[in-house]
Amino acid sequence: MSAIPTAVEGQKVESVKLLIGGEFVESNTTEWRDIVNPATQEVLARVPFATKDEVDAAIRSAHAAFATWKNTPIGARMRIMLKYQALIREHMPRIAKTLTAEQGKTLPDAEGDIFRGLEVVEHACSIGTLQQGEFAENVAGSVDTYTLRQPLGVCAGITPFNFPAMIPLWMFPMAIVCGNTFVLKPSEQDPLSTMQLVELAIEAGVPKGVLNVVHGGKEVVDALCTHELVKAISFVGSTAVGTHVYNLGSQHGKRVQSMMGAKNHAVVLPDANREQTLNALVGAGFGAAGQRCMATSVVVLVGASKDWLPELVEKAKTLKINAGHEPKTDVGPVVSRAAKTRILGMIEAGVKEGAKLVLDGRSVKVSGYEDGNFVGPTVFSDVTVDMDVYKTEIFGPVLCVMTVPTLDDAIALVNGNPMGNGVGLFTQSGAAARKFQSEIDVGQVGINIPIPVPVPFFSFTGSRGSKLGDLGPYGKQVVQFYTQTKTVTARWFDDAAVADGVNTTISLK
Image (cartoon, rainbow, N blue to C red):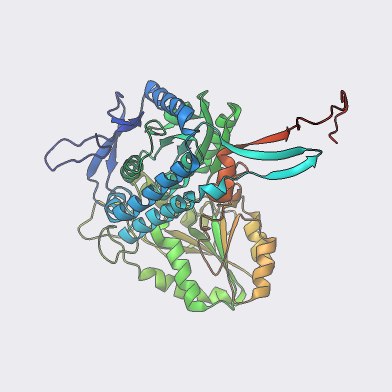
């Protein structure tokens, strides 16, 4: 049975399935949520909020499968990922159409969403070298010490609406290829593209019970965080929910990583390449309607670069606002009517606080999509650190522009913000760049790159208020997160060895 609804016009909207024990099953719940196309308000499907018993069944299915999966040869696990990456590549256009319909982002951006997740799956194919331990021979007389990187057991993942392909692919492929089993809870707002990726994982050969999927809200999240059989939890989403997941999971003895909110700055020095910088700022500020955790939401113009503001606004005005599937669209709708209402409220608050609204996207109309959740590119200038539009993650196409005299002032401004997800510096000075990367207290730094999300060979490294937990998703750090280190110290005696009596000391010679 497919996990993906295939509603036909005039027929009842179908439901998204749960994946438990290798079977796509209909939920017995009485609580459902509509999945709505944000450009049209068309109901695409409905998603269940799984019952407590269904969540328990998914976790126990994963626990049962772990007994055999943990002993599956590493080469066999790797070959499943090799097949999986090929299937994702083959089906990318189809999944991108689904993603655009349920989330709103443009088709090219939807393909980018899938591709950045695909890169992590490709990296998972290197598990043969990623999961190697260490060995030291003859640490004492005939004594060797070595480490094993062994899987934890049942792991869980909780993912957000803004990247329904990339972020699930950050989680379950790496967890599974390390020998764990997994229970995934996708965003209840747009789970259809996630479920298409899950179906492909099953087609690639992931055994029954190794990957399970439940849907829902807070009750399902809490069940994952407190269940005795769950060993680790990976979360990406808002600060409020991420803090709750980290605290609740940690209190119940889970290993937890929470990647949370952001207020990403881009610092512009006057010597930067003007055209390239302005293009980068507009793309990073308004792409995906600003609904990226690494979106540029604050531009800090240093010194004479303050004169660039009119050009920044003019470039923003050229962006085409339309439904995500329409050709040449730059900015699609935000994910829901609630999100639009919240963003419009933040813009109004900025006006009341005294920020100057130099570009107002509140009244944008899109022909043919009058019911869409559209907010046009919006730019505030004269923003100060005490304003809510600066302190709050708006998660919409709203750019705050600030000015400071010097690079030192810009560094102090960025370091004074509680969030530490990403930051960019635009300059042609190597000395300035080196000073910036050394002194800035942010996890991910871009030099002439506005959204410095690292490739999967490295780890995603948000910091401070944007991250809870020591180890980040994907890269080398996530192999550490999804495994535990066992150290073995061994001595083998030759049959001809002479016994040297009882040793009551703690040393080995």
